[in-house]
Length: 258
Image 1 (cartoon, rainbow, N blue to C red):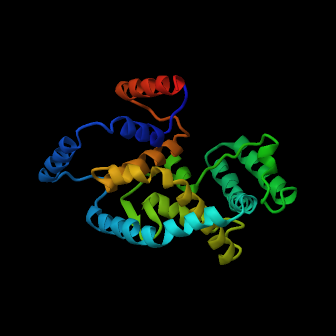
Image 2 (image 1 turned 180 degrees about the vertical axis):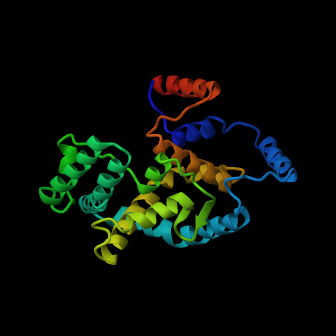
Image 3 (image 1 turned 180 degrees about the horizontal axis):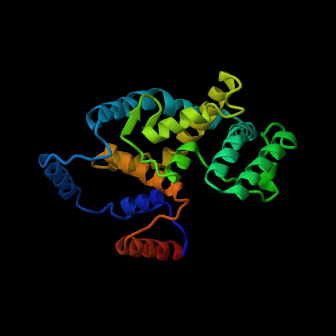
């Protein structure tokens, strides 16, 4: 059976359930609010919701979304791809370290080989010659390493401009900022993060309607974030209940018949 990511499953469930009675869902949300349900993962929910509104309704609407779409439309495709390859190549030394810390020695050596190959024959990483040669990426962040070591995520955090995070993820990003070559100059680190942010935001345009149609966009975003984090830490080997497994089987059958 195909391996489905939590985000894909959630997207399909929302799409297939679009004909459901939204009023009934809203009544359920109101019922949960009256019982003062508290998400243990989100002790700062009041602050996080305010920050989500600021990020989504102000920063994204007026800055990030229009800038990313303008970048995607106006940047020549070859230059855009080259810049993105360059940014991803800067992450390879981090992949070397994190794979090694997780006991994935073979993957660590592959990441090292990719970095050396792309940085030389790939013109500083603007060409992904390693992938063209059949050498696949093995992305691992330090936050995932902490998760593999057994560290919990800690409280959920909605950061200004940076979006959803948690204590483990934020700590991991601070450590990765000290990895070579991102630690060489602030300009390299800033440029890399900017390119990845623009590409990521442009790629999410088709999923905006999911948030717009959601009864509680904040809760949807938070649940997708935690599912995605768990999916990465477990390398896609997420344990599912029988009900979830049946849902995956139904979705897989549906996709096969398209």
